[in-house]
Image 1 (cartoon, one colour):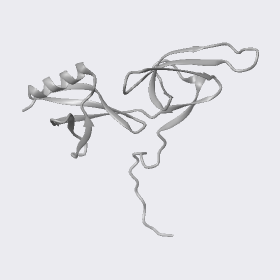
Image 2 (image 1 turned 90 degrees about the vertical axis):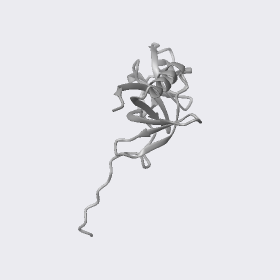
Image 3 (image 1 turned 180 degrees about the vertical axis):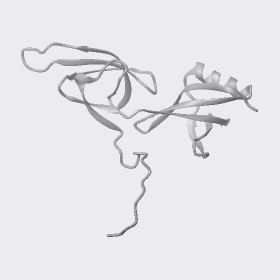
Image 4 (image 1 turned 90 degrees about the horizontal axis):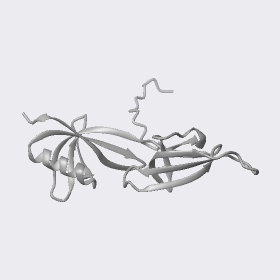
Length: 160
């Protein structure tokens, strides 16, 4: 046995599952669920009563958090559904390249250059206009199941 202590960064990325199981009957509106291998936000849940042969069923209507598509699923309420781990992180915007990628500043001072500009038109014009005016912008990046996308924008004042 060695006497040295081991220190681990608790980022929970290395080998951590992209989803976790949750009983279908406990998933509520505004929660998250995986439908057809896509992370979705639940917009409507309805539960049917137990029928002659078995389970009460939950009918989920959800919207894909990355592409905005509407998806539906019906699951027995006693069964488990996959729920994605959804993280939101704020980064400061440094630069926008010609090919549509953004350069972001992380908390530890490194840059993150692998994200594209969002496809949402209003958010895209807000980012481009604010950056063109020389404002200090902070973007919120949502990540789930190995995908990342800019989902919000904050203006923290003009550059000094």
